[in-house]
Figure 1 (cartoon, rainbow, N blue to C red):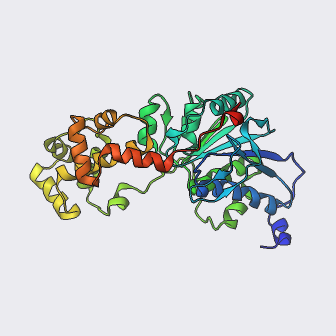
Figure 2 (spheres, rainbow, N blue to C red):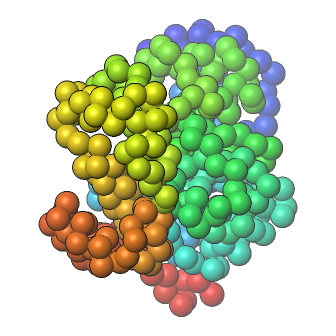
Figure 3 (cartoon, helix red, strand yellow):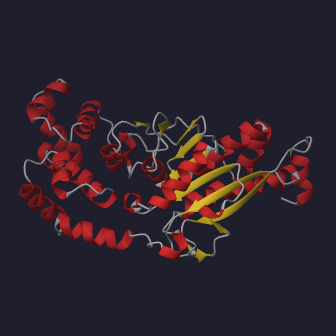
Length: 344
């Protein structure tokens, strides 16, 4: 699309103040989330034929900004530099529970008290919660982080949706959901017509609302259409800390245990018990990788009667112990530590 075509795409309006956004990109930030949030701003400027948005890249410690895929570039400023902003987007990936920088949380709280709209993308919602900025707000976070998130912040109103805009807080699951979020931000500020033009610019032919689900339905995920089996699988996923018996599962499905076992064998090539363990151990792996819960706490949260039993099952499933899993994950996801000089 040429600049002339872009200018003709959307009717011209009276000049409005330029909106200045800051992107706080934490070590290992997901490049996809960042790109799908910032690119719609660029498109909005091009389509409107004037500058509607400007943005800056911020670091919490002055170090180069390093993305999850290894791309690195210099920050425009540090968060603590007092940059004038109209909104701040915090983008984090990896294991956001490892980010625990008190000076950063303090600056975020100060900005929030001044009334600055603040958003969390992907693991960025974890950072906002650690800073105490999501109390009393509806919020969301990437589904991979949800188990650890709800364990650490049980009082927060977590929704398993693409994004949530609640007053001066925005939270987004990340990935391409950031595109949906930003198009909604543009629509609220500059109208649906411009937002639709931005959507078409990026070949987004099927708009998604914030309330839409992050994940495919269980039917699509497991490739099974049997309603009784799907209902049982959903019940398993919702009862991990206190697993229920095969008899209770069958009763909930309205069939006998033998009939339910046949469904598992026919459609999933496994047994009820084996599938239930796989679901629970899968949740345990997410908690080990994405939370600071102790191994004993992870075991309890996933319905194992003892840490030793949990460790045996885990090693049989993945070939390494829960402790080894956590150590490997920590080495891969650990953010850079701020230096004393940069955080003073």
